[in-house]
Image (cartoon, rainbow, N blue to C red; front, top):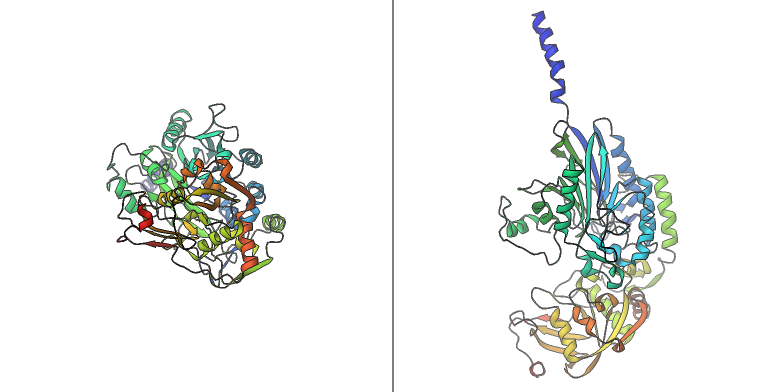
Length: 552
């Protein structure tokens, strides 16, 4: 019996290495921070009694906690998937420098570039990125002047943790070409994401001998992830259509399925977080992504077999939230050192932002119903008022927040319109004005935010002949009359599908040198209380027939 015990003990010692415990790799991530490193109220949870979010200082507390769990069997990484600064004052006013300083302080391992990084000039952007103490990754941006990657990005990095070689590749959505000012991206091209990522996954796997491959992509999962998947692939992941083309860039789901060799994809761009990873049934690639504006920190723990150096599973930190940890200030007490730094930057960036500039007589909601919202209508009314135009228009996605009824501050206006778009007006005949509207009801498009017009259209009619009734300032539309229209410089550059606007001769354009945000402020100052209504500026009637002036 004694010999049997000794033999059993010896066997356990000899075989202990065969059953080594899995390694644990904590992956923390952010995406679409949009300058949200400061404290904020979670109005998206409860607009009347919003809980307080701690921003970057609360994130720092959680990040430090996760890192404190590290040992020989457990390590961590911290990444960002792009759109890091443009949106909140502390990010926008400092052109991202405050956010980079925060990311340096808390120790990010890598970041990729989002489309909104090019909301400022490339020269300004590179000055900001040059401050980073971590690599900026993007494998599909090409400098037109050299044919190579721009100096401010690298395609990938190899990071060593826990005896693992971890390849991290970044890419930027090709949507950037359609969503940025041409002047800001004049020196760069955006290569097809799938082609570029495939190239570098092969390099990282076969030349760099990486054990794990992580992709930081500024691209997101579809909102209806399972339903959309089954329009592209069957339940086993086999493509339903060959030679598909991504007119608006490949999204995270498509990259995960169609680029072999990716273990984890960290995405963003669409501002929707998922409590659990999406796992492709064919490639088994895991896709994770978070919400926006610094409201949460993503945290997923990968378990890795130490012998095969492959992922064996994952663990989530929370039962209800999964990997999406909302940064409630009373739950994650802000790190005092990080908090002091951020608050000092915020004080400079937000000077004068709490001045009351007017009153909202009703809750100005931004939710679109048939191309109308109270907030959207207010903005286009303000544009038309500012330059005394006949017709004002704005893209549906250009409205970023509500304004509650009651006193309105400059801060409220900034949240509605965080981007530095300028007001532009131009003269055109009625036929061209109609083409603008027809362009935005073509196909599955749902219109524009407008002011000064009354539009009736039918989706049952052919494209570019769907408007059945059109009035300007209450008068029937005249195809030969010259009208004054106003919009933003962003749309005048041909963005949001309005490429026809680049045809407007420069002599017919007036650059008013006023920021749209300031035009809205002026409107509130002079017209409060604002009591905008949903009215008859848009009407879809699939049984409508063209009025007599539309037949001319």
